[in-house]
Length: 333
Image (tube, rainbow, N blue to C red):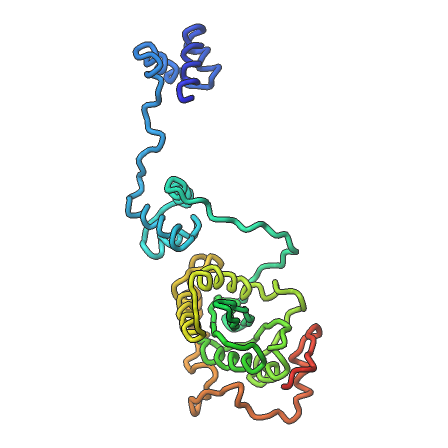
């Protein structure tokens, strides 16, 4: 197969000349002359290409090792591998080069998910940290047990707070709300949740008493909480499927370590290659000096579960709920 075309070229050139052969096959006349001389000198073996099918790589072997590690252990695609090499190892390699090396090493392409075609919402990010914090709950099933991962994600910086709970109810939501206020290094102005029963009237009143807005997304519209939903897919692919836990406590501890990795080590394509912590560092004026959830005078935690009762909550509820929120009359708040 490698000699069939050169043989046809030199045969045509012998009969009709070099210039007609070059015009007919779209080749340079120097190439036709070279093939003809090699054929006259050595016959068919002279038409075998003199360059190898796979040329020697110009990229160092150490870089190839890093590319293989990113593909085999980290399951990175070509673009994410390029950013990882630049950030972690200060190496430069084109995405096309990375794809070719992975193909030569025998690694299949990264599996692409089938494209969905829902109604595309306008993509945006809030301008400041704390303008909108999306909160959602992910159900975890492992070792025959069911746990619940509470997630709070800042819309602007993608900075997250993660906690694992054995139950999902309004008391757990109140405890997580108190944890988020103390853990986030900036003031929260709005929370955004879905219409689950865990975000009940007691949760709404606690959020309003803390001086924050509460927005319920529309029913059956999880894409309105799309950033936290997308982060849950990252949790599933890069954390829960790579670890096996037999008890609750080790899983909760490992989740805290994964939270630190996500915020400080894992760069985000949505943030142009920055980590959430690096994105947050670009807003130094908005970072709080006093941890959220503490009072200036005493410095003691102000828990959402130990708040004074509200004597007349009815006028305040109107500014908390959205018109689409379905209130659960069976929840005892």
